[in-house]
Length: 200
Image (cartoon, one colour):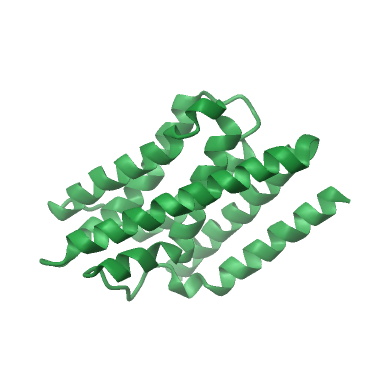
């Protein structure tokens, strides 16, 4: 049964993600290319960035699927630049966690009518939380190499998400909505879990 397999895959992805939740944000370096390449594999970033690719291929016309990743990357750069200038927000880490929940809601709604501009705007908001967090944590030197690595891995994760979205479209057909709903629910639960860990 495809729907059972979808549910099992979503639960497995959620459990795997929660097992690595400790890698999300605290205690990372922001001073080298390698640190930048590795950091997006933290749970909060990994889930949000892959979800951008899945949503883009699922909710946008195929010839415009590039817009989701492009908006995320541009908002990431702009907000990190603002963070470098000293701009920050209270409870920023909470905002990063909630961005994962937001991306989960977008996936749940991916097959329903939602103006593309609204979805892209929400992606920009989610990305800005990540960018501000990293810009405000930046050291006096070495951040440029870190930023390059972070952007390279972010782009790769977006492409991976697009690949997942294409696979869902091609192989699940009429069960596509259930698959996206299951992924979105798992993503939202992960975001809620990350938020609850910060609230403790």
